[in-house]
Each structure stands twice: as structure tokens, then as C-alpha cells.
Length: 257
Image (cartoon, rainbow, N blue to C red; front, side, top):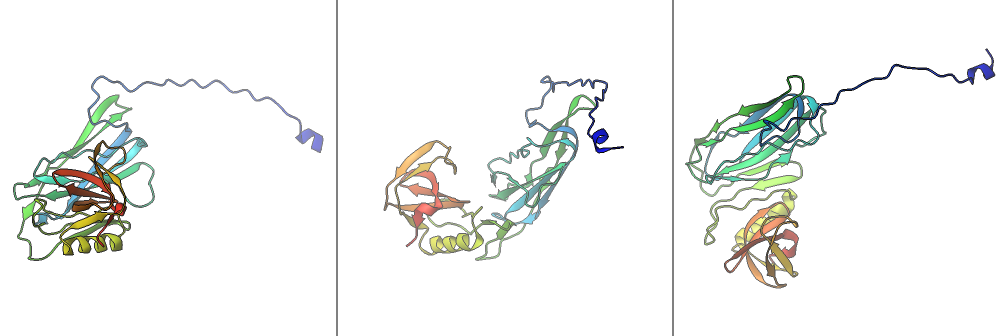
């Protein structure tokens, strides 16, 4: 066979492939459905379960199985006024096909917070043609007394730190939390605020928001040089008090000097 024969083209005919694509039904769609299609398991772990008021409890939620998970958001936890709840975060590490993990911080505010409520995950089972829901929990807590002059420190990832502190005198708030900042910076700022009465100065004019997000509604303006009280630190945001006003500003606009 010569080179010319190798270059000869030919047509190969194949039978057409017909696909039947069904839409996901809207009838019976659960309110917490976020787009998972396939067959899945849902595992939830809460730790620690033996706590003191103000301790951090980490809820780890793992969705795994066979199917489409790309649009899926974290199952939502509604724990009521007895808990302080932070927004869920994606799990650390390299993404694994067919698996999504989320972590959520829950902080009991009093001894009435006897259990973290059940949490559910809903998906559409294409084989069965129906929606399914998996529920885990509730997770019952056991309380012990906190040791004097102590606070718990928790780092859910290498770049995230969440710190709780003992009572904040005079502001009506019970803790400072640090999340999403480097441990050294967060720890340094926490110590300065606690030592100096938790007051800081705005080093530039800034707009305080109702929530720790630039897309949130505007609360009030903070002039450059204005002295404020830091109520809480969450990630790169600080919740401040200015008179009877409360709002969130980027932590980088504050100084304790």
C-alpha cells in the first residue's frame, strides 16, 4: 500500500442516535431543591457535642453519589434565636467528582440550645422519576461549665479562623468571631480590640452596610477619623457601632492605633 492509498478519504455512515430528554418536573419540587439530579447519599456530622455556651460547633455536610451536582448549594440550617449561625462554606481540598462538602459554624447562645435541628438535602432521582429528600439530625448537645478566662479557637481551613471570646463588657454583645482572615492578623486585631476596649478609628471614609457584603443595603456613612466600637469581626468585615447605628465595614478601613 502506497502513501497515496493512505491519504484516500472515505465516508463512514452510522445510524442516527436519538435521545429522549425529559425536563425536571415542577410539580412536587421541594423548596430546598437546588439542582441535584441523580442518586445521592447525605452524611452530616456535628462536633463537638459536649460544649459550653459560646463554643463553636461545626456541622459538616457531605453530599456524594452518582449524578449532576454542579449547581448544588449547601443545605440550609435554621436553628432559631438560641444559636448564632454563620453562612455555610465549601469544604477545603481538591474537588472530588460526585461529591460536595460544606461546613457551617453554630454557636449556642444559652443552655436552651439543647439541640441543632435536623438538616435536609433534596434531589431529583432520574431513574425513579421522583424527588427524594434525606434528613439527618437533630444533633443533641450536652453542656458543661466554661473554664474562667478561656476562649475557643477553631480553624476550619488553613486560611480561615473563627475565634470566640468571653463576654464583651458594655456593648451587649457576647463574643468576637474571626473568620476568613489570616490567623496572625485576626489574632492581633482581636487582642488589640479587647485590650483597648474594642474601639477603633476609621482611617478612611466608608459606607457601613446592613450585612457583611458590598452588595448589601447601605446602613450609614462613616467619616474618616471617626471613633467606632467594634461589635464583631467576621472574615474581612467588622460590625461596628456608631451611636445607635449598627453596620458592617471592611476591616481594613479600621485601625486601633
